[in-house]
Image 1 (spheres, one colour):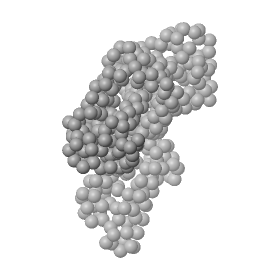
Image 2 (cartoon, one colour):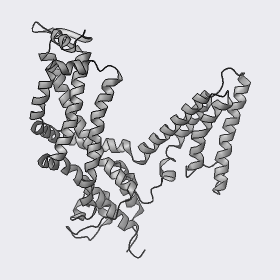
Image 3 (tube, helix red, strand yellow):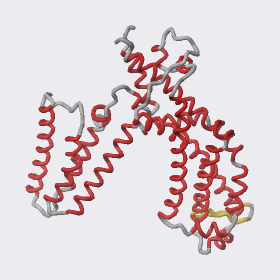
Length: 385
């Protein structure tokens, strides 16, 4: 079997990246393919932290000497790492592994100790760098930005379908939640969730919904990864179509087993796609509650229900009736929107009819990605090669 065209393989790998599944790329490496792309921003953050760690009580020349020594130490680590890897001393690293990441995390944390025994600052810097490194790894390794862009692009093409699903699935929910909207107990609870309490309460609904989706995703995807009938048909609109010449339509394609990271990457794609759809439906519900509240709830009624003075953002007269957009109205609408989004998540994933309608399209995208991966790996590692 002739080796595959490297240009075709490159286009397939770019296709994986654009859909937020970079771990489908063969030999995808964290040290080579993830942190090397983030090396410039890591270096910039490191230099900024080194500058902020200097002691303002010291003379300028002392701070300058400390900064120079720190910079020289970084260059020394850079050169030593290249020397150990038998590369030119000033070459840009082709891998960013444990030594480089340890320098990024530890050096800015050690400097406050040297500059005046600032233990609290050192611990905060250490914790902040670890969190920042984790976020950079998650966003870069699992392609969260291209994944979100892909999910939003799909959603833009499916706004009509999502709206139809919203119209079919929401009448009973809106009937129930609208009744809650017109009760003073809900206004008293939601209007008194000040500051972070409202955000935490809404986040709890979102978190439970995410946990529920995460629990359901493996069951939906597991059956797809075991085998793919109509594999060549799935490749027709992808760059991998050139990797499967001569395969008859409808011929089954076996998808090689997924690693743990590939399972996680695939699950995140499904989770993001569903999350964007649920977010759009929740925004529709939120806009309905704000509009309904402006029309049905006067400022006097809102003040009576919330048990206090309203915080008016803007008000006007509409057909001789006072209308006010208040903080309390937005809080009640936000609270019920979070609850409705959680209900919608559970409903569409448990009701058989809506579950298939809601998931079939994204699962079709998953089948396509698995078929492309199967053709890609078969071309990259042909039998007998």
